[in-house]
Amino acid sequence: MKILLIDDDVNLLEALKEMLAERQHEIECSTSAKEAVEMVKNSDYDCILVDYRMPCDDGIWFMENADINQGTKVLLMTAYLNRKVINRMFALGAAGYIIKPFDEEELMTHLDFHGN
Image (tube, rainbow, N blue to C red; front, side):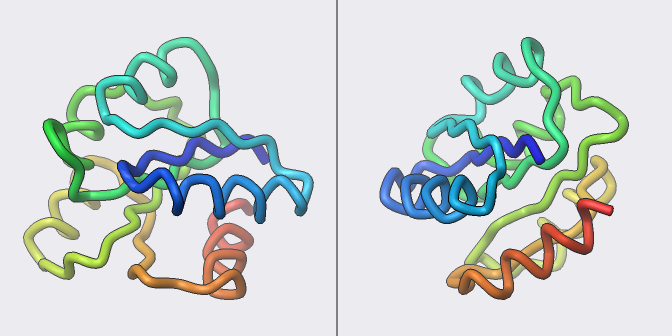
C-alpha cells in the first residue's frame, strides 16, 4: 500500500515510516498541509494519514485544498477530540480517524480495515 503521512511531528513521522516500511508499505511523509497538497497532485496514494493540528494549515485545510483520488482512503490522526472537527473531516471525505497516541496494533487494524 502506498501511504502518505502528514504530521508536523517529525519524530512520529520517522517512527511510523520505519514501522510501515517494515511491513512492505511504500511511505512518503510531509510536515505541512501545503506540501502535502502538492504531493497529492503528483502522486496517487492508497491511504493518507493526516494530523488535524499543525502550524499554519491544519488537516481540514488539507482536505479542502487537496485533489484526492476517489479511491484514496483518508484517516484523521488526532489527539484533539472534537466532534465538529471529526464531522467536518468526514464531510470532506475522510474515511475514519485514529486517536493519538496509538500503538502499532491499533494502526494496523485501521489500515487493514480501510485498505480493503
